[in-house]
Image (cartoon, rainbow, N blue to C red; front, side, top):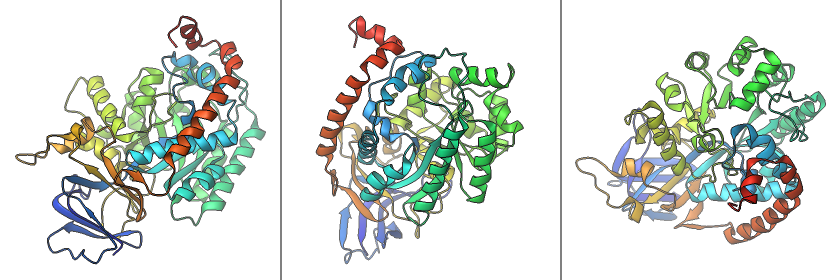
Length: 475
């Protein structure tokens, strides 16, 4: 046996609940889980590494169902803006000045933050995905569901009014589809990599290209990961292009583009009937409440989607909006905002939020046979949290286990002290084993300073409300 975790609280996520085992133990051999059960009777003493789990929780690694890690380098660059300005006037003037090396550095920063706070699978949605995987995920041995973003719209749109339709460039879309195909070809046999197709959104991709992508996805037995119904900016584009009564969900349905192959991100500009249709068609949803709360001032309808019987998970989107890639923070935000939206403190309880960030994430990404729960034969993606941290004190187990809600409502991520991916220890006792954290932080600061300075004139010309806030001395 390679690793044994003993005397711990196990959250296995087997069955319909959390599968809690007191004084539990976990065995790991050749990258897979070889034992799940009680420490009593577990023959662990010959293991190469024994992790003492007293006063700890051991659980599946968290699964981030939607993340753009390269944009982490623009953290703090686009908050407190009107939704209609966020993309074209807020983030775009900065992102235009990022080089490939900047994207890679931003990805390292984002993955590092996710790892430190317990994420073991990242649904990376990016451009230049091959480079990001080769420079970040594979060297660090981190599990990734990779998506090359495909759109037919260029960068030069900061001057457009909200009602001005984007001009589609089919050759750009075709080139990006070729990059997506390269992603599949290069990493088909990599154990830690799963690939999906990534048309950015209905307002940024023509229906012809979307249908081509669907054909290729079905041929590859792969999913389509797409932003769906993500606010007023998108709706103006859809009604301008497809008619005043059109919506993203209606157009997708009419053209056979709703189905089990689709992972829909955000969905906050859908109505109840559209969500019922999406669930009926088997569409999966990933919610990013912190990002959408910050960018749109709206709560994604994840609570309603789950209520309808739909499959859902959680993501952090991009740090330039909500500010972080901490899934424990995202669980708390999802639960609190959903309770507020429904005016019902019983909806999306702590245990449901935990499921969304683990087995729920695995299901929507099509990797539940590998990860998302602690079961013999599954790949060993495991984290431990120290219950003796200030934020999790006190810990009691009778008459109920108070650390379950505390994991969602009190944890800030610093309690994570061991992270194991595919049986390899990435974080041990709170320290990275083979990653120079400080070097990445230093490089990120140098690169970000250059990007922001280089983008200064374009940012001012875009004239978002952030420019006014800065002139007034708030920033």
